[in-house]
Image (cartoon, rainbow, N blue to C red):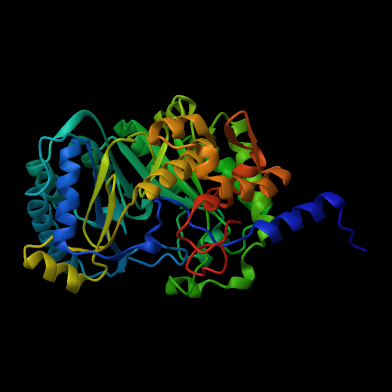
Length: 460
């Protein structure tokens, strides 16, 4: 007869209590709170940004993919019709030019990222032309972080070396899982030898930093199989490793309906996998960065976290806390100090806006001072696993205990459950709490309904 131990019972109770829907907090308020925004509103937000004279972070969304990955939660267009990319790049070039008329171009670019989709869907000529268009209107700081995501199935040595020669100094590619059965189930088959070959080319080209993405919670994964994936990833020796919790939201992302939900690991096994990942990676010398990232101790992210300077935005964790993010292309999101904006999600509307000479913005959010304060609090928790009350008080001229009296009272049960400690004017997330840090952060969120929001993924 199977017997459940008291420790296992406690874990089951913890999962039942905290496996709630919550944002991932790449922004606060989250993108689910965005509402209609027009060109004029966004132009005013850009003017306010220019007045602040902050550095620039630029994001370019390249949405095309040659095949669908069933786990994908990104905004993509799956097509083998390469002519679509030709038209899209023409409009992207127009958007870059039109938006540059509003942005103070004396502001240096300290960070650039190409994401997707699959940026290496583009031909080498298209990559060079887009790069030239960006450099025509913006100038880069000498130490700028210039990164790109690539799909290892559609890249070769020449492509990687061209990226490096243009100026890209950081590169990221998705592994998800080394296990062939898992790869088949998510329609992302990429042999182990291929992944090691791509890493060899990247190292040969001399990129300053290499990131790989893993996902736990996928079909057929077990604690044992994912431990093998972690061990092979350690052999690969990337500078950074992102270990994402699979967000199964088929109602939002229909492609996920192709996944057999009965083959997904249970919340209890996912929690075990998450704990194992943290143990194995830190044992191998990586530092736990925020919610789902790991980096080598000498990496900029690890250094920023040690100095409590790590921040989070739509690109993930960043060492550029003062840079304001401008997104270009379909569905891309901009993140300014006091406003967010998102471009159109459909090509027709995006093209029409650009043809009209307008910024192709459709959704966004203007932050109140309360939003700014809460964003700082939430991002400190999500990024650095701690919060210094005096620092927030000094920055915003508030009394923390009074301003957040309701929230602090709401955190007491989490303190009793061992997720955090509140003492001597500081909130400290415990090792257990790191696995459930979104639950802690949501306590300070006044926008999201704490229960029943099905557009958000589960925290476990």
